[in-house]
Length: 162
Image 1 (cartoon, rainbow, N blue to C red):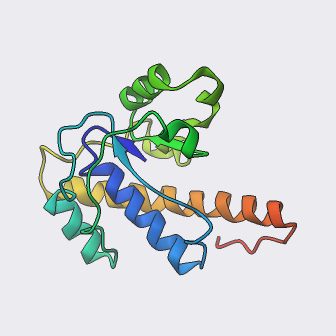
Image 2 (tube, rainbow, N blue to C red):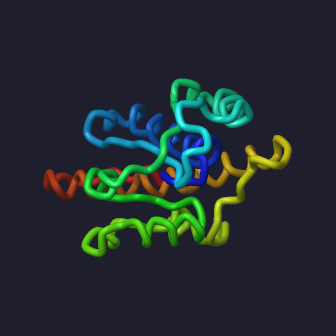
């Protein structure tokens, strides 16, 4: 998951997916991380409003620390999700051509929300609740895709959560 500073949108998405993977017993099979396109907040925890929103919804993201996207991330991850079109454009410029098929917009999974996850940083608490709602919808779709991929790789039937 990639956003600008890795303190609002991407750590929320990262924490929610990690939590869902833990609940499904898949946390040792799937590695999730988040990063920023810029190093503004490297080493800092998520925005307190992101932490509070996640905590109110039963997810702890307080232990996460912001980091900047690293060149090796393009080889390390099978899927890199950009929180908005601007992030995707940056990722496409930085990514080796042979790895670009691993880049997607986060909201490609739930296009009814538009193309970009809105940045809540300069707004009030409702923006963080909006990001949470979006991440909830995308995480459900990601979990379905992950379950199907694991089942396909292990030749097992998938039990849908829908």
